[in-house]
Image (cartoon, one colour):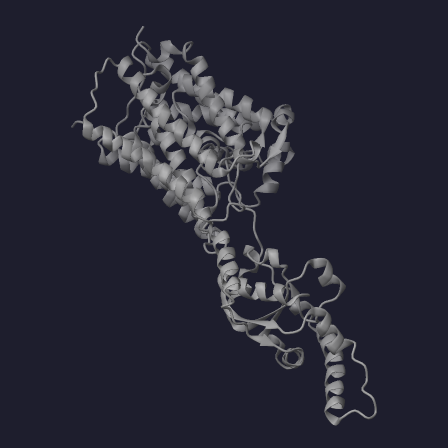
Length: 173
Length: 399
């Protein structure tokens, strides 16, 4: 079966904007993603290495600001919703399939390593920068956060700056 | 008035809300094509600008929506979460994220979407980001200094550049539309696509492009709700149309002593004067703070009456009028000023021996009332403190 084409980007943007607006109106906060991954990491350390959890500075600071279990966080529930929503959308448009997507000129192994490296950098950067493209850039833009908009410009600027060097990953030889 | 959490929607139910908006978020990201890494990085090589179009449209829509809701007094801008600005960590973190984006082909949100529909590279990306976050956490003592450097607080960009929020929205919309036009041309050039706009399609684009500007114009050219109320008050005063229900000092004293639970006595002077002297059992809500969220409960109620007083008759009346516009309750004005009330009840001189019986009775009543009121204030200290609605900080961002 042929997969359905994607939604008109402006229409998608409008709906995404309205989703974000409702979120801000209802909860007073924006959307996010990387924070949920952090919660998972913190929860894992808390259960597998409780002694280390007690000793480390970061976990102690985290514990102080998050009195409840790290998994009982807003973003964890939101990301569970994201998984469900994306899966639903994939089902409707016939896009659910195990698939490795990569640029034309590279092998599967390279793509996997690049994805992992990229993920590592993004994960690290999102902690340093207090949020990723969702939490800092998109939500920050909606509430006019100076830091959020600055982070957004730097993310895209840096990616543009490095695009030339990463071209072999994405473009034909 | 928004945000609905935590006043109207509990923090518990908020988690259900999170799941529901998450579904919307994930669904729309996937529908837009953000589950495809090639579509995502297309932005950086010029062959597909979907990301920019979706991202900017969403940002402008949400921003104008937020401002519009605030304009209509439906959303309190002071309460929503503004991501704090730490200059160095924002710059450095952003640069590292950019590198992650171009190498990995995803960002955290899109990688989750892609993994949800089975993209294997997305699983690799998520695995990597778990590892990256773990490195940051474990190495936190090393990064802490730069993480916390140059803290500018939760500053908004309009505040930073001292422009109005509406002007920023205008600029952002202008930039967005300019970018849309430019990238579409680049896209067509890179993909060797020749597109001739039909008249109809051109009109459609033009029409949808003006919509955000219309909303901004509405905000700029119409008064917001607070201004509207002030305007209404000024007009009502000018036309001398307003009638006030007045209550006399003796009557107030009597009611306070016998039915204190039915009355909110509201002192609308500044806190300093309130501290110096106030009528016992009164609470202090300065006139310029009456529209604040924390006092709202006083002005929307049906069980008690509000009695306003101040040093001048006009101030008390203004407060009474304001209460009428911002809420729904029965409002009275004390006929006497604060000083007059004090002289009448607290500084009363015993009448001359030749005075009439009525004067003696008045004296008896007032001096007794003065004592009773002071005693009551002492006894009811705990209860007569204003019930300030707690304004809670909202957590947010990626914490």
